[in-house]
Image 1 (tube, rainbow, N blue to C red):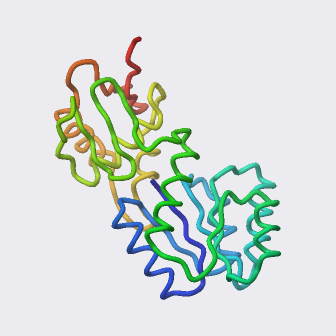
Image 2: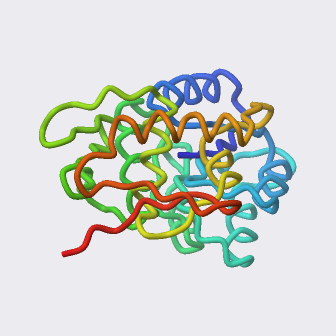
Length: 224
């Protein structure tokens, strides 16, 4: 999953990035409202925006208002001072999906992030089942017929993206965008290598990753 953090407190932002990267997310960070607005107008598709309201150069509520006015439905988790009830209400009314008052516990934030990303991808449940393959989005564990599959962090990321889009074509560029942060170089050839490794580990029984030459990959739907 790809997450954008808009937070001007560098210490807090560093802590959030470490926590979320440890949970397998690709995380990008901006420290002002104008930077957040610009990042959200690029072609990059984020799975979640963590938005501080008290941003310099553009208030978080204005960032949110402009985001929704563009028709962007990315889930938004607002971070706000504990006493700013009015801002929390405004944020929810403008289209935020959840909020957390500062200070907060990192484990709770992780849980809220997982729930919002699942909901945004259309998978409210933690477990995704695909024939004999089961993927636990919370624990980031894949099993085949109940036996854990040994997957690297990159392979888990690929599997998660494909499972969330079962039956739909996912291009190499989309995979790179979902798995990599700004400045991180991953070539299309590297994606091919990761897909090859993933196939060797999960393609058993009806589970198949189809290659559409020149276009991308598709985790095939299972009949019945």
